[in-house]
Length: 163
Image 1 (spheres, rainbow, N blue to C red):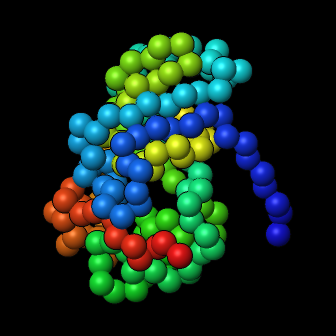
Image 2 (image 1 turned 90 degrees about the vertical axis):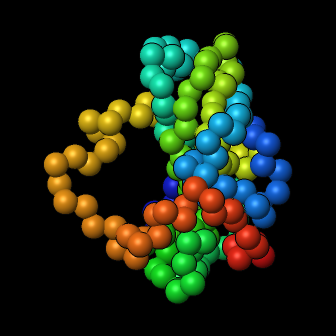
């Protein structure tokens, strides 16, 4: 197995200070404000990002210990393979969220629709581009999630992935 190491490029701040009760995805965090404090040595990398309304945040799920290959996702009562879910107990604890970019002030990014725990290490930022990031013109199959989508906005995390 190849070992891979990443360093944080900044920190994500949010009002979510407890894992229990957090929104499970940005769809359930409409209007929740947060900010990113990017390490100053990466500030030049923000050039032109202010032209995008949404960004993809890739971050370390730093509060997860260990992983499970089978999990009961927040939206289901049945055990599923971890790769068929967005559950946090992954072999590589990497999270991803699409959030609204409200404004940039120096190395501070003000964001909305934040479903991320306070003081989460940020690994990368990418602009959200629908032509690249949204599948169009293809039939989509949503697996076990197909009949659960109406529950996502109101669902909150519980303690099932906390050791």
